Image 1 (tube, one colour):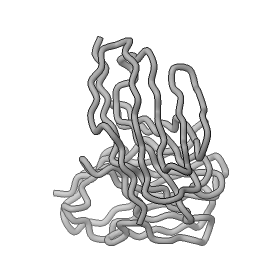
Image 2 (image 1 turned 180 degrees about the vertical axis):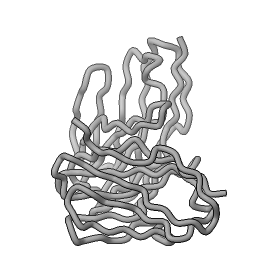
Image 3 (image 1 turned 120 degrees about the vertical axis):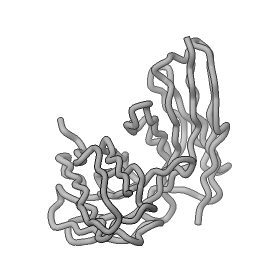
Image 4 (image 1 turned 30 degrees about the horizontal axis):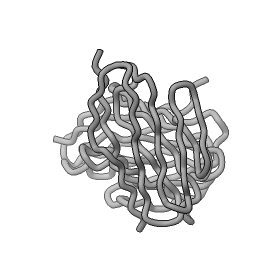
Length: 108
Length: 113
C-alpha cells in the first residue's frame, strides 16, 4: 500500500517563528488533506489540497503531486498552533490514509 | 451546527464486554468512516461506508462490526472487547467519498481492562 511519511516528527518553536512541515507519499494520489489535532484531541481540517497552493491566514500549503510531496507553512507561530499536524491521502480508493504526524510545540 | 457527533466521550470496559460507539452526522454526507488512534501510529482506518446499506473493511477491521441503516448514523460495535482495543476512536464523514473534505468527531477514549 501507499506510504505516507511526515517530517520532522517533532518541532519546538518560540512564538513568532516560521516553520515548514513536509509530507512525502510513495504513489500517485487523488487527494491530500492537512489536519491539525489540538491538545484536546480534536481534529480540524486545515486544507483540502490535491495539487497547487492554498492559503488561510498564517497557514499555507503546497502540493506538488508529480513529485509526491506536500508542504505546510506556518508563519508567525502562536501557542495555539501547538498540537499534531497530519497529512492524509487517498489513492484509487475511498480510504483516507494518514501519516504519523508532526508534533509541534510553540512556547511563549 | 452539530457536524459529526460521537458518544460516549469516555468509556471503560472489562475484557469480554460488548459495546457500541455511536456516530451521527447532520450534513447529509454519503461517506462515513471509523478510525482508531494509538500513540506513535497515527490514525488507522477500521471500517467505512460509501452510503446507506454499504460498508467495507479498512486497514484494521478485526474485532469490530459496523452497519449503515441510515445516511446519518454509523455505529461501531465491539462484540468482545480486548485490551488491544484500548485506543481513541474517531468517526469521520465527507460529502462524497474521501476525495472530498473530511470532518471528524471529537473522539471516544476507550479503555479495556
